[in-house]
Image (cartoon, rainbow, N blue to C red; front, side):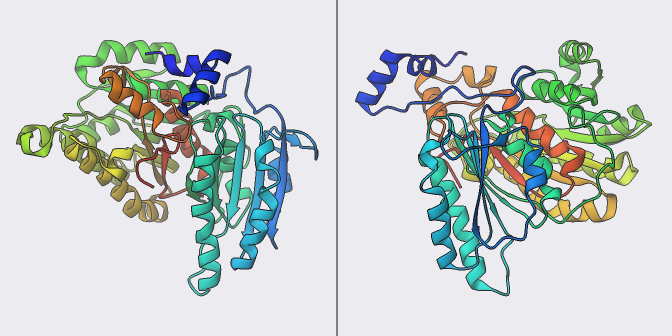
Amino acid sequence: MADRYLRLTGTAPGRFLTRRLGLPQPAALVRWSPEHPALDGGLRHLTAGTSGLDLAPVLARTGLGPGGADDRPAAVVLDATGVRDVEGLAEVHAALHPVVRSVAPSGRVLVLGAPLDPADHHQAAAQQALEGFTRSLGKEIGRGRTVNLVRLTDAAAAESTLRFLLSPKSAYVSGQVIEVGPPHESPAALDWDRPLAGRTALVTGGARGIGEAVAETLARDGARVVVLDVPQAEQDARRVADRIGGTALPLDITTADAGARIAEALPDGLDLLIHNAGITRDRRLVNMPAERWISVLEVNLASVLRTTDALLKAGTLKRGGSVVATASIAGLAGNTGQTNYGASKAGVVGLVRSLAPRALDEHGVTVNAVAPGFIETKMTAAIPLFIREAGRRMNSLAQGGLPADVAETTAWLAHPASGAVNGQVVRVCGQSLLGA
């Protein structure tokens, strides 16, 4: 369903009216397209503290040219990895205070921090302060601009992350803190335009909505995509698969032998396992019968646990591969009438945080999750008007996201060069005002 309020605020009378009434003023976001693969404008690189990172080669490959002193940069990158005390935080203010206002609409502010040092509580305090700073700036910067924090130790290991966050692909990702670990083995020769070429991806719940968008995006990036959905949706799954040059796999993911049947259908193995299948059965707990609770936990969590375990144990998931599961801000912040759904999605977060280090050590596979907020789908279009409008406006970008926003984030986590990104739960919610 079209966001008529967003259209209104894009007109001169609409801007005047909403400004006078003190209403949200969302800006139309600039998203990736073949005609618009990069942000328009230059990049300004700033430093607070003494940094040992060699960022110049990576930043030069983002598609953003160097910004001049008087222009409106499309992106500002502040290297604050060297900030170790409260005095260093003054340099953060000094660096960004003069330039924040000049960042172009739909631009990016990216703060780079260091991992917290458990042996130095002054450094840990200063680096943790960057998180509060980043989230707060994201809520006030406006005009479709985003602010994120990346903690890293190696610029090359973070290249895929920096490219994503400094591109139109991250239009609905803001207020996030992403940890990039030490360098991880990645392909020696990598085609950044089709990084998934030669890889096989399985997308559960891929026949419609967000799953369909994920399947399309992974195929765009070169993957051979297997679209899995329940047998009742086989026609839709085949329609999607035919359009993107993939194959359909009609299968109920909740069956006890789903993992074995997937392994049998993919004798050559699997590189990317995308857990997108999910259902809602909303009702307040006092009115929720057991079958509503059980069905949601079974589809959204138990099936994810079972199939992941089975495919790892069978060796179907290849080394260098990725698991990307779908959580939700309902699992992080809670939501009325969704105790079952919130529990299932919080369970996905627990799965990711526990399994990620072991899966990487034992199988060479990364495990991450996306946590969508209010995404414009047929499901959200059916929400009553006033609740739907509240969902759209209660984030820093004052609008709903699109399935493509979740898909682009999934594709980044599945990228062969994202091997140093592991155990992360990334919210795709426009920095929702619900939860952290």
